[in-house]
Amino acid sequence: MAMTTCLTWMQEKKLQNYFGEKQFVLLYKASVHKFSKESLLQRCSRQGPVIAVISSEDHIVGAYAQKSDEEDFIILFAFHETTISECKIGPFRLSTLFYASVRDFEFRIYLEQKNVAMSLTVMNQLGLPQRRISFQECEVFRCEDLLDKRRMDGIAELKESLLSAVRAYEPYGGLVHQTRILLLGPIGAGKSSFFNSVRSVFQGHVTNKALVGYKTTGMSEKYRTYFIKDGKNGNSLPFILCDSLGLSEEEEGLCMDDIPYILKGHIPDRYQFNSMEPFIPGLDNCIDSPLLEHRIHCVAFVLDANSVEHLSHEMVEKIRKIRRELIKCGVVHVVLLTHVDTLDLITKGDLIDIYRCVPVKLKLEAVHRELGFALSDIFVVSNYTSEWELEPIMDVLILSALRQMLWAADDFLEDLPLKETS
Image (cartoon, rainbow, N blue to C red; front, side, top):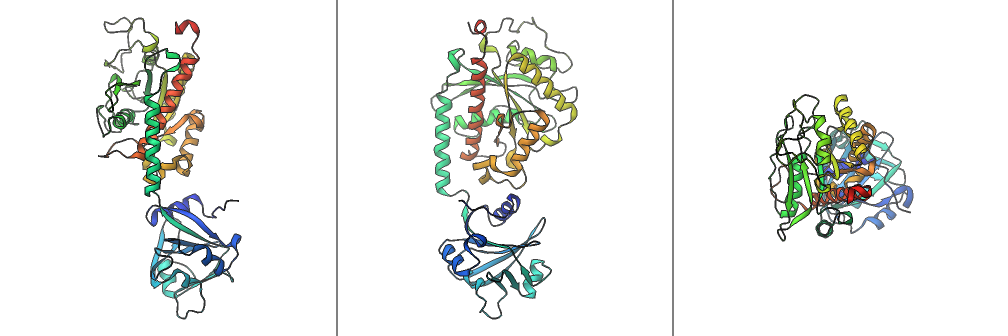
């Protein structure tokens, strides 16, 4: 049976980030392997960098050693509510901390007696109220780099697999040559940035074809249907991303009356939106009798992960109203959470397994609670906004979300009445 740490996700994450974006592998747990220094040293020798964590009812203290089997400086630390205090001792071997016979030592861990003793100087530097602390648990972790070569090689392989899958994608039943995905969401949520990010992945370098504006204003004022060329062979990829004016509680956002016309394929590329004047059928460039290939096959609501709990009542009602129209038209719709990399405590290494991160889980639950989307229909991405080079981990998130949208479009095409597929 796998061991689990008694640290909360937040505590473990703060320690991992504090010591240089590490991943912790639990080697020793006193309540499982006995409160014995012999057992601890047997399991934790020759492990490279290690961290020992002592948990009491009121305190979390410990020691970090960059070299577990050599004499080196050891960083002692104490966990406070919002901060971590530290002091450095040594050079010592980590094992020295567990031997009571050493005289005049600044920090000692008595496993058998389940208490920690420290000098007055260490106590003050760590901001602790007493020199001796009784504890209930002692855990030792091996500290690994989150982005080591083995992990990055695996990410690179996954990226190539996803690229191949999207390139080989064919819309359901051959009903259309390219599926159309409409990006909807509040102004500044990252719709145009997502298009740029998808294009960047397939071009092999960061691009900025779609203008990206400031959070409060956005830049998209025209309806754009973006065909994306594959940088590998120059061919058009089997999907089209459609960008529109952002949603707003104010009058300057996308007119709600325009949405049915977008969904049904009447609005042409480069149509200039006017918040005060809805689209009028029959204009010179209007698509009077749109074909299935002109229609929207999937809608992705693009939301900023930092603001999903703070959407205004007006915005929530607007999104719910759009969802009712989508359901009426039978269009499958999903959610795309952007800016996930800027959430508190999230680092680039966390993007490898982002859906297990507590802050991200909380955001998914907020979307589910406020807007009613199933958790399985909510995807997270980190768009290219300030990077100069492609990052394989970001690419995997972008491609994974795109593949899910293509599958959603297939669900729409598969569910169409026979008379609409002729």
